[in-house]
Image (tube, rainbow, N blue to C red; front, side, top):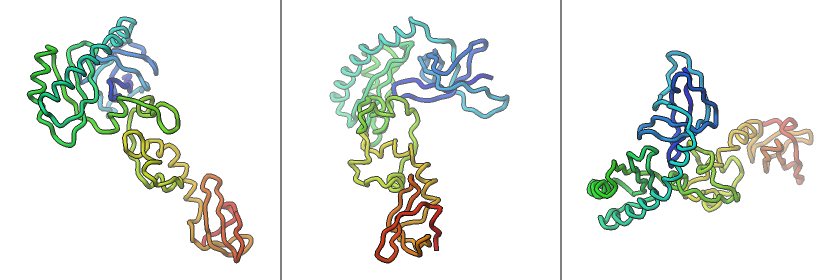
Length: 263
């Protein structure tokens, strides 16, 4: 059975889909898929040949490849979504709800209108939904998202000067910790290691495994070691160069990891 991993929707949800019989799909294809919210346009990230009985959670089915009319229909939603967002934002204010509306999205089949919002806790938006349903005459859904999801939807430019990873290619968030910054010898100043979302930058994970492997080969700072020049204490470490600086008497000498032995 052919299965594809595809991304769809404004928050860029990644799901697995079966492929309709006889349909040839390749990585990068834009397809029409049956998702939890109805028919949607999606982009294929990878194609997987699954063995019978293999345990993969299938979201729905890829019906066909998207054609020009599908793309035009998808693009034509944009002005309508902007207008829907303005109306909903006004209604949120009228209802006095403690929530920040982030974006609006129509499904491709125009049968559902989703609103994404931020809030500190639970929000009773039942009256708001009724109000919006009477205006738009279709099914309304309110989806609470997090700070990272907001940034993923809205996009922006990162400190590196490039478009944000989460809004361009990083579809699934990884767990990020301060330890990742520590092991890469980065400043622990929150302003230096936080992204536009206010959370730790996703790119801290990109080189973490490389640093982790490099650290495993090296002694730690303040550790006593034996070198070709005698015994001393490690004063600094360069993990990517696989070098350590060792204080021996009044000298500070640099050695490769092969030249030092921990005591």
